[in-house]
Length: 480
Image 1 (cartoon, one colour):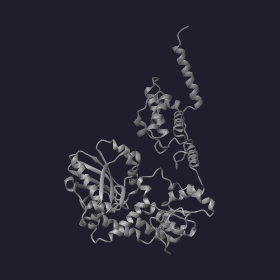
Image 2 (tube, one colour):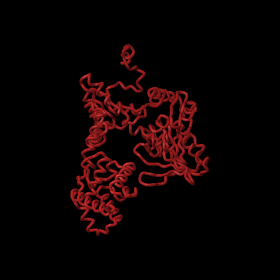
Image 3 (cartoon, rainbow, N blue to C red):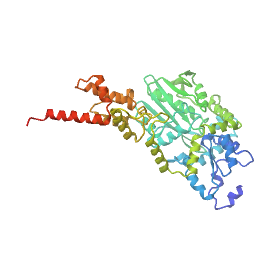
Image 4 (cartoon, rainbow, N blue to C red):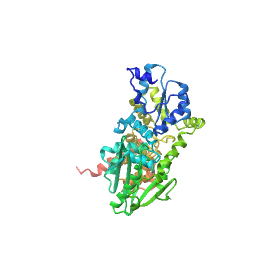
């Protein structure tokens, strides 16, 4: 096989373009697990492409997290199929993405180089590592967001942050946001860590401390912990409090933090670690305290060497474990464009409200008027008077539009909290409007009289309104 790559000048890919190569008679799923372990990747980040229905079924059944793409039999359909696999699309790439194959190759060199050393500490000393901790800048926000989405093992809370959420933190008072870059004798790891904390009255609170597995076990996690102590001391705080939320994969982070403090329960699957800032400001790696690397090794060995559970994998695939992958494959198979998807969603929204609820139409005049407002703002038809404002997609902007329309039509001014707390449906809002109308009325009508008016048909209400307006105009017209 290597000879084919060496002799065929028309090959698009070269042998060195592959970060890991497995050539054997093992099941494809077993080889995928080996590659995942070798490259420190989760199976949910892997894609398997084959034109064999048998091989695709074997991988799909054993590893339900893997996106399995069975290529069409006709060659002319392969390219359109792959172009429509939206899971392969990326809005943009970072410097780390662009050199991903190089990073994997460098890590392979490090593993071979490490075999020369009996002590992990001696190995790290020989790497000549340079760890830079910098304030998070706007230029690094996308990469930092990417890490919050991808890092699972050394991640204290597994909080996922998008770009806008991280950008908002930059201007938040009391916020301290750091990123970590690493280099060694084999090359540049790039931006591999994120540290998000907030200064409180008596302590520094760390809600995100995460590090790429490529840099874990090389002393970087100790430098990050030391940084929290230094930030705290610089702010005059003597204590650092680090949140921890347990997940299926972040046991290495918990074991590392337990080296410095005992966990204090703080809710279901949650705890906090309290540390004196002075005691951790100079935290550094030693062979004795390399608990994070040991925990990661144990975790990888347990998860990656376990034989695939055929039954469990199939059950997860058939239920809800692979819904997104199935959706991606359906879209690719039928060559559905983004425009077609948007049109279908719009068509569905125009015909239905809150799913799973029996539609109850508006019955009173006020309900009908308010229903018209909701249908216009939500761009939907067939809504029920019991549909929840927020479950339909309501937000503060839509709330302002609703209140503005109500003021325009009913000549009443409702406070914002009404829509957020007391009147979440058309039915409830109509009752609230009626209450405000009655309170502002100078007619002296009783509740029974007002209810009778409210139950008039559209035609009866219009006729009554016209008579009252004519009467008012006649009273106000000057004598001729």
